[in-house]
Length: 379
Image 1 (tube, rainbow, N blue to C red):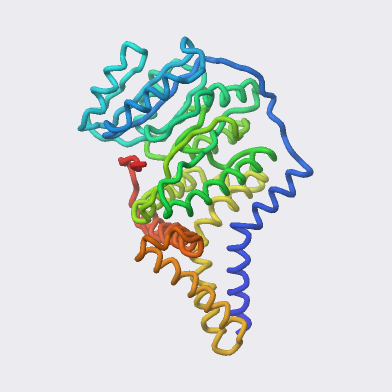
Image 2 (cartoon, rainbow, N blue to C red):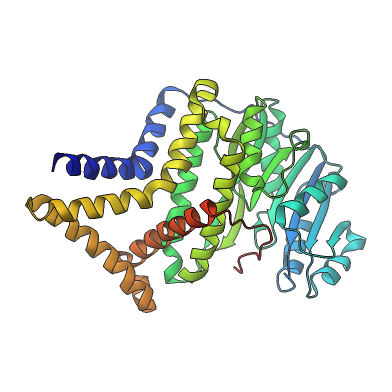
């Protein structure tokens, strides 16, 4: 019985630390220790790299969005890498050739990060900006993000994600994104982010000499940046807008891909988890990433240990009922879409979708399955 109680409370503590404790720890740390970025207006040569696969419905709007940037046009190179698109994406991109938009077309599908690496090879910018075809930047976003590079200690900068609510079912992710942005703000204040926004970030080209075409650039580049002695920070005024999903099934598959790719990065760069060498950054990585990937395991341990203990101790019986009610609300919301407008249903649904996707991601990772090619999430 004592062993089961230890398992239960350790699991509860691990879950609480992951979602609440780490955030509160960062908030407290930021009160006593913060590192400012020496920002000023700074306009280096920038190469804006966008990857696309069958984006004929959005690519024109994306290019127009790029062309409205307030960044000096003579210092901005726009490269769009098409990953074997089979629709009209490439012809639309070519129609903007006279406006300085460069197309780099792959005849076959090789994957997003492979395309990014190819684009880097022809990029002439000191700073590389990456954004998705489904993401739209605020007009001054590039100017805002580059001013951080005036500080020679900064190597990589994340933009700020802002969601455009697509429906009642998307509110769970919207809350999650706002939470994640607050977390990144605190991480940036005390030193470094452990990851950047995949849909909008910038990095010094000099830090991209080592390129892994089968790994997620938005995760391993910040790690390599830190390993090379540079800071990874957030620019909250560099805003990128995207629509969140209103379909749990699609959100589920997107998150499976994200987690599997993240696990592959840490397998490749696992020395970063050594706190004796990388100090606080290693501990941040464990709290922000590793612990989240273990939350489904902790949830199952808490549920089953609580159920067994509940046969003898009333407290655990009630706690088990609370867990079952939470998961039941998620199941009901999954089955009845109209109920997702209510917080009591949409938050449990999103939470369960996230953690179920992590469980599947573990299976795919451990069995050697990887995501090389991709289809962008249709926002």
